[in-house]
Length: 362
View 1 (cartoon, helix red, strand yellow):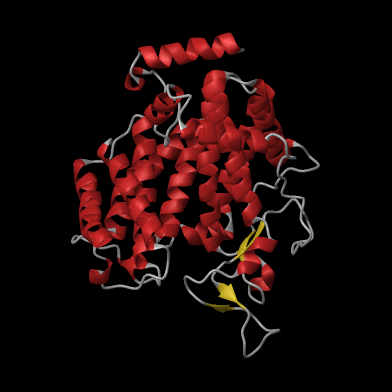
View 2 (view 1 turned 135 degrees about the horizontal axis):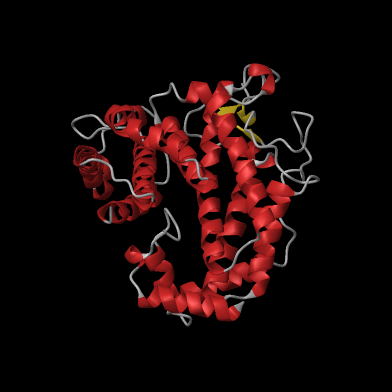
């Protein structure tokens, strides 16, 4: 196995990634990983392996390991809508909205587990790519099996209870819950990265593709999925980018062709005004944060599409650049930002800089 890894690593170093017949990853920048592989004494390299070593010592994350289950089936993914809080005037009644303010109760449900799942897979996939060590590969596969495949612990392939609001809709989820699905993009990237070094097995891959195919079908046909497709905000960007990525993974060409065809007019042009403003994001209490987040989804879509052999038109790219040009000056002049922002400004500024570098490579 190590020989296979080092042979693959030699090929990656020898030939430009742009010449590969098939991309290794679709969103992640492989040049950054290859550069890190050449710096085994760097702190970043050591920190990543130290983190991976901690992960492989714990049990794989599972959706069924929870004390609270609102649906009656622990295989259902259940998350609390983070901006909804108990009503001080009616403590036992329906929750009320406080846009941009995190309710810490969300930690009781599955969203933190979903984040930990993503972190486990991403970290171990990168550690395996860098070292070829079997322990990272073995844990990676066990984590995939635990969450997506094993009958005793697998997650049901839907988000019917994602971002539920206590006291509303019979405690079922809502279309905004589709936002949680964006975490699947990094998981798919981790599968691609490991698979480039060593096969995770035909049976396992077949099961994973079946799970994601079922989830994609739910996204398109469910009540929540249909409502999401009628939105005009960042939820729709999350929906399209995630669904397009899943269709690449499952090999559904005609479906992703249709998404790509509609994306410029129905997504880019409706989300970004001619002056570069993103009205749906700017009306939020985290206007800067949501602008960056929505832009990130558009750039991620364009990045995935490019790896899939498609490019957004020059007009669409120009519209995206207009949005970047509008928001960028505020990064170093927060006082001039004419909208609300109650989030972590410095964090979003760093994300914006990363986004801009990503866009330049398109």
